[in-house]
Image (cartoon, rainbow, N blue to C red; front, top):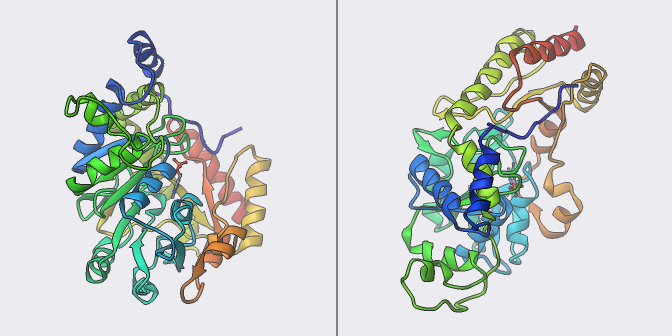
Length: 375
Ligand SMILES: *Cc1c(COP(=O)(O)O)cnc(C)c1O
């Protein structure tokens, strides 16, 4: 059986976890968390990176920092994971869904401006499959209307747009280190902050509303309750696991990229004959091989394809029932303009197995089975 995903494991994880245990430091913000934060800062150029318990929580932190509140509107695609919307609905805001582009499956930057109202507070681009949204256009709209840009870069670590790291283009960026992502800590994430003026508030929101971070640095002689907040810092045990991955980030990315390129090469004839569509990476973008997907003709054909692969012991999956048509989406959000591509394209998309450790032989086998189906 070829799994759809296997959590990344490089070999050093247990050693680092033992190190944390032996050092009697297993709560948050110890040495491994610090190393991971610094690694992200160096890699992306952001002013401050803070590990969090998930990308969901990183997005909640960003919503707090942006001062999102009841009555505010936040623009995002409907084709995304629920967390993108949850973080803002929790603050009483309304997600305003904008259609996607069929080529990248990202929010259609040309349809954003017509969704802006006087209530709009932020735009949340989601970099699907680690391929960047059209950030120049999005940043320009945000600037002209005075909006925050909060990047859902859950899938975007190591990817770039015009040479800039995803996650550090908008005001805030959110990474995920869930076990299905390129680098993992089981459950976890990070918030990336561009402007230093938000760092102190971010530390306070993340540490239950206290200034404990300042206390640890010796900047204050006792720590106190400064504001509302929550507990968004992960345990050192998780950070130790992540460190073993970040240390090998280039190697992990290269291996994933080899698989991605092999898929692309082997499936290009099917795409050229018009049977399937392949992912599109705009010229200004480099990606991280987070995902390899293909698009079938329609929902019925996709269902049969997944069934065919399953019969051959290959687990392929689809995802994202568009948020605007889900029960909570109907209750809390609204769609701006027309759903031309969101539902139609999401119905056609199927993700093929992709993980660190997937072999070239397995990719070849999967491609043969895909070709067999379309014969
Ligand atoms: C994985 C993912 C998330 C959620 O990440 P968690 O770390 O599980 O909270 C959010 N948005 C997108 C686009 C994702 O792919």
